[in-house]
Length: 88
Image 1 (tube, rainbow, N blue to C red):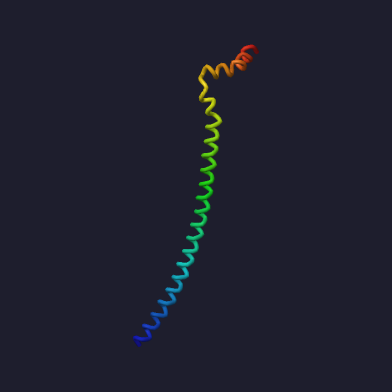
Image 2: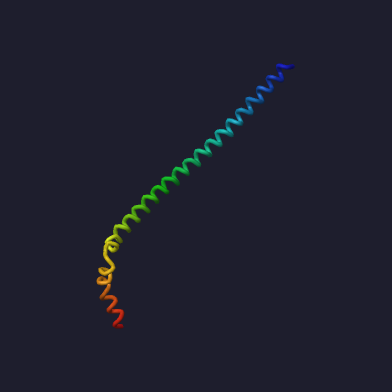
């Protein structure tokens, strides 16, 4: 009688381990999909960051000549516009 109980317990444990293995495989597959989507998101963010830095650098390079001018030079640069505004 003890042997039958042991055999039935072993069969139950084997079935349970198969189901738990299948559940573990499903969980692992789900985690792999999440990791892949996170990797894609990271790549998108890296591209966005590089583009943002390039745009910022280009903007600074374009504006820097104006920053190098003194206030008097800027006044001379815009003097025709100011005189046109005062005459009208």
